[in-house]
Amino acid sequence: MKLDIKSVDKSGERVLSVTGEVDVSCAAELRGQLTAAADEGLGAVVDLAGVSYIDSTGIGVLVGAANAARENGRTFAVRNPQPAVRRVLDMLGVAGELGLED
Image 1 (cartoon, one colour):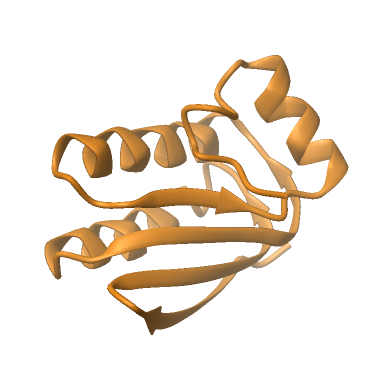
Image 2: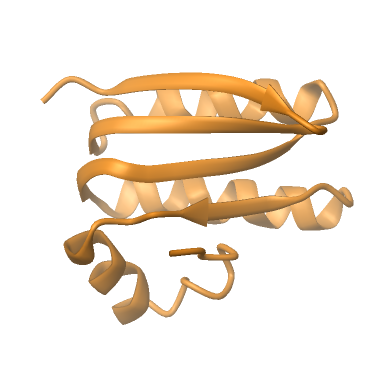
């Protein structure tokens, strides 16, 4: 499934609404969007409501962005994961690190 990312800037944050599957074949696109927001000094919110699957590469992108945001005093949060994605984040113990919001 093709990855689609829509972005909107709101109050010093870039909200990325992601649709599709985040895996090794397309995780670089998400990383690029998150890096662009950081380069502009913006926090990031990643809305996963439209994501049905995420692999370890995609999770690594989110964790890396969360850590970089924290180190540089920017906000970062993941919101609205579908149940299957939420289970994976919980099982790996990264939900808290990602500022997960339902």
